[in-house]
Length: 126
Image 1: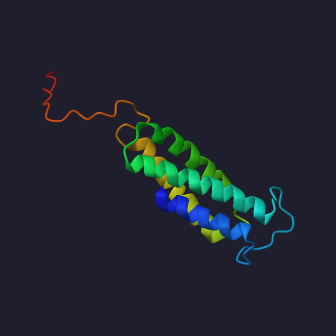
Image 2: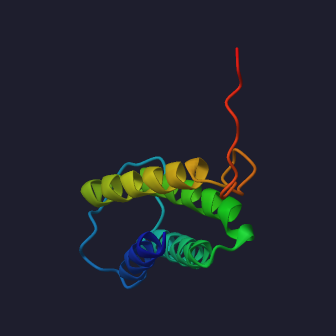
Image 3: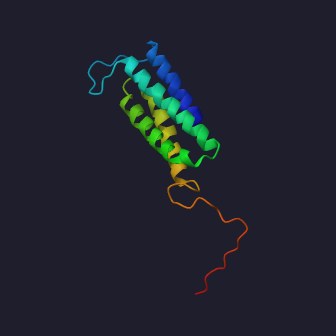
């Protein structure tokens, strides 16, 4: 998450500075100025990176915001597809992997979170 957040923040900074790296899209329903997209990506990138840092420190509060910010990043990248299709697809794939990892890891949305260390459970007999 930290790496994805940093990449999104750099993408946002490039948009704010008006980098000619991005394509000009004429007729697009979700057309926002390049500066607007830059601010969106910068804010989401900082939020994802900060939440990722919390997850690395095993902060309990970070899992749900991580899912929220990564999901918002995925939607923003989907809407940004016409401007940078290849890059957006790469970041969407990273977002999907992050969402899967946060939801499937121990202590994720399945509840619990504590593994029973050293406790042997007997097999139920039929």
